[in-house]
Length: 315
Image (tube, rainbow, N blue to C red; front, top):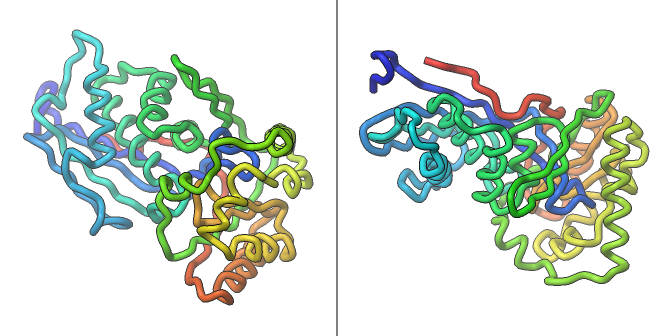
């Protein structure tokens, strides 16, 4: 569809997979990974949704699509007087390159990609801070959407009015070995096994380690990650859904991982390693451990993505 003087307007956003919690930093700490999906948005008559790649046979192509909801939420918040090229509808294309419902932030990627694309088409009336608040409200928590938008390692604390965050890149390179089991685990199900309250002892256990985690990553003291990624708030309870988790963690550490944690709600496991060679050794060890209990999966080595969501095509 033509808009603004007859030019075709199409925007494609590259958005990273993310790993959240990082063990001790439940619902607060996350990181962007060098594994990307793409969201394309352009004006159209009515609603057109196309999905390719992961989830192509499952994701709805209707108003219920979470990326569609993100665009429509943004449009509702649009200040008066802003030209609205999407008033007649839009075409949304989701090119999903990493697995869904595996703890890799696929829903955050879809929402953030859609919001960034729509904001650009509208002339960027919303600030980064406003986009973060919209994305966190839609997602229900901020630990995936903040690194998806900003890149790097992030800490996010939602308040009633905004998301307070910090973002940094570790001072030296690090690799992350991802073990991706071939079964889905919905976030809602993974949250349903968590207790409504925890003991002060467990809370203190995690508070100290989450602080250590941020400091270790920010200063490059990666030898602290073994302790910093330990957790008592969510991973022990989620083992009921993934009974193989302790043996995979043990395999990763025995093979030389710096630290290991469940990625988001799971079932993906993320092991942080000093370099590519070490990451491959760790990935193989985790995969063999998973295979030994009859669970299929695959592994992939990634690095940290420094950019977050970015526009890669305008047309």
